[in-house]
Image (tube, rainbow, N blue to C red):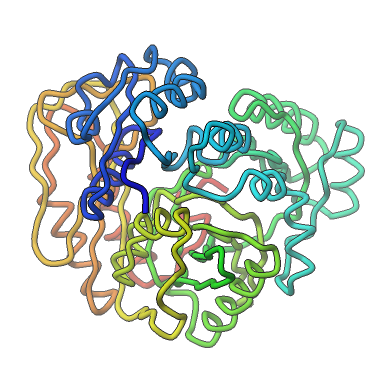
Length: 435
């Protein structure tokens, strides 16, 4: 096991990883930008290093500075969290070159799975059903020909990256050229790779994903599904597990197929297989995220399994010590993402409490939200024995959560969980009106 880990991230996920390390008796090293000098993750870590200016490109994406900090601190491993360098094969190789363990998949695995169009071709050989689509298209003309063959409407998507970037819905050929240029430009800006591909648009559908853990010894387990259909402009707002749209028979079948697929492609680490679930109950594979998901907390609340600790153990070569039969998916867990809507100073913070209520955050009174990074302030997660009870618990927790000085989306989250469509479980990707 590692004795010291550097966390190459910021915000709530950096705090989350530090807490897991402390519980494991592992020393922690924080890195921070000039904008985050007084951030919570810096105060909680055993030691910390400033690695650059406020822009992410100057700090949290500065590979050489992060490696230098790890070497200086004597860290044996680096946990990248999510975002930033978490899916960067070049950084993983740089860690290896300097004798540091990257807590995540091997760089070869990341390279093989990073191109979503290539990944879909690989996954199709494992027994999972893949959304019909293309490999990377190199021109508007090629995109038009592919879309015509697939049949409108279609989606144009970035081959690299995630987080809803580089994605456009195209309903007719008249929209394609502008959408192609916009998606390619956004992908190049966000991921340094402007390549895009075309896939058939599945409608109506829900976004359902499966959480996987796999170790070096060939063991793999699925920790259930998460429904992530509550989105605005491809950005997730609320997640729950298990999905109210998936029955036990469907769940058992898709979980087995997912575990088999992960084993066949030789994946090691924590990963998420993402699907569209159509009205007929068919699962269509979209993509695989080879990192920790923002919404991993709902899976932890439902199963009682700490995903961050298992990421660390698997990276240290420790085999998974439980089987699929040991995993309980009883009850219901719901997560609301609490986002900032202004870059102001936090005047007061009150965090809700009680059994099975969790708020993962980086907030401390007196801090100011930075304009340089994403707007996520924290994730409010609840668990109860039934979905109805979980909804009541979430409503109470949202009402108790007090964040003064910063404008947030708490009221919007209350409206969502109070909507009859959500209460009934009868919702899909059109819920927020962004399709």
